Length: 284
Length: 301
Image (cartoon, rainbow over all chains, first blue to last red; front, side, top):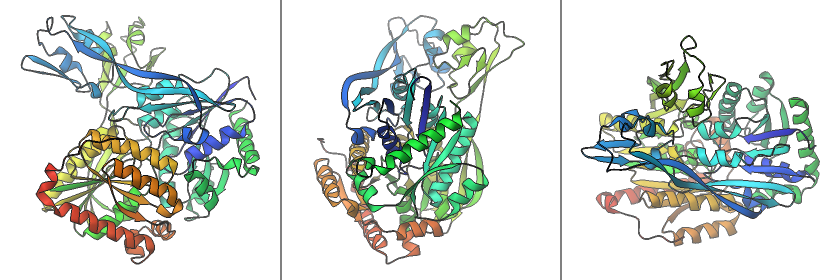
């Protein structure tokens, strides 16, 4: 299974449907080497289940402008250029809003006095280590920071050139999700058979079609809710690759931070055949 | 005017379920769905859209091939790696305008892109402000700000004193945009280790913005040991646990029926505790004017 690189992202739209459960249990089902990355840097949870030994903590920095007031003549060109409203010039003072800065470097380019330089600001960290035979990394956005993108990009910088990489994606459908799934060979959409689950699944299907990433569905908590999820997947020809029943014991193990395949080893084969199906679909 | 935000950190803990029931219990209230990239409150409240407006998020660069001399200065300068082989990748482009500025031939321009729609609607519990972000679009924080602005205008116009906000999961920009200037933050959590870990981070965000959060433990009986840990952690963080809602499959049935659980089954176990939580929230809000001065004390985690 080594050799060619396969990146599988695990997403959902709706939160709390079981992304982490699927990503973790699938990664642990492999006997050999596999890589698991948690890109939900706002609320990462995979590490709770895989209990990694962290070898490296890499701080994530973003460049933010710093104005040399001795050179600045308050011409406002930087503030007028900035699309993100991260710089304001009020009377004879330049005000920076570093949380809004996207680090594009535009203000440096437009400043006629070369009064702007950049300094690094720490917005989070990537923690890299091993969990048994699983190469593991996760990102943590600092509390109070609004933009997860740079931390997600640094987690993804850990992707290896060969072998299998499984990515745990944040909930939602907007920029952090796109950053996380971008470049994947395949995306697993974990959902639950409820109206909320179906609604957000449809949104994610729209995102993945836009990004041209092939996808299939894992139905979690199968048995609750209604049958509309199955009807939708049937009529849209979206493959349902695995169903995990609603089961009190699985929920309990989850609540304790325990991967359920350890207690229910029959699921290992199911996750491995899930992976085999994906490999078939993406054509190895 | 008072604003309550329901947030969670971890997704899927029951924000929307609780918000829908609170809306039903509140009577006349302005409802704002700020989970703009995966909004679901409308599935329960069934809003009738009264007006729509386009939402313009970030801009997008485009290259005029007729003017381009292929110097590739734009590719070299773009920090998002969004220009490859002189094609703009709309997914990676952040609309900063650096390429348009640097191009010696003025071959690159920025244009507005329609990133979503905002709606003002009517529901049987009061007016509703909500939105839909386009597939794979950015700038959800800005759309949240628009939804909240529309909600405030609705409250003023209809002379309503309460805005109920269904927040997004996470701790990033849309959450921060949902929390600014709020009177009461209710964090919905669940008794799992993930829930406990995520709660610590969202409480940190609340502290960062100087608001005192109240906490509801949803499905508390799934793991009572963890529920106790949450209560302990909340005590250390000056965050009061105001309700413990039991696990109840009636909640899912209500969702399938498209109704707030409090309306679908007013006397089920979950509804009883949700009603109690709402009474608690009302009494906190009735403290009235002192709430504004109710700043967060020194915290320790």
